[in-house]
Length: 85
Image 1 (cartoon, helix red, strand yellow):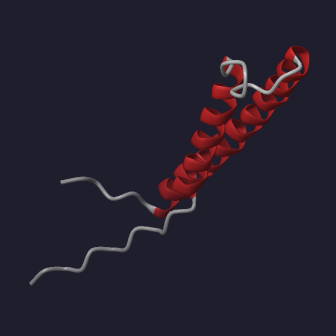
Image 2 (image 1 turned 135 degrees about the vertical axis):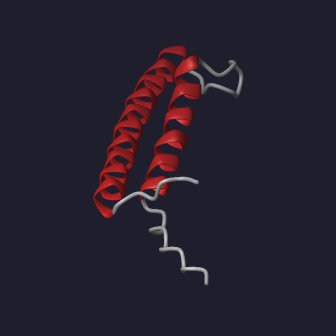
């Protein structure tokens, strides 16, 4: 049987997930900025004539991971189990 998290542990876990989500989204924004610079250097958009660069994949992956962490932080609190008689 799993041990239930106390409200303090749950709040700490949610805060950690939210902080992780913000950091991942900021990293995704930086990767997107580098990808935009890379596209300007090539003179073409990645994916149109050129294959996607690693910065494009990194920006998309980091943004998806950041959103997933924020969703995990915003999930509803677990309800207390009813006592069985």
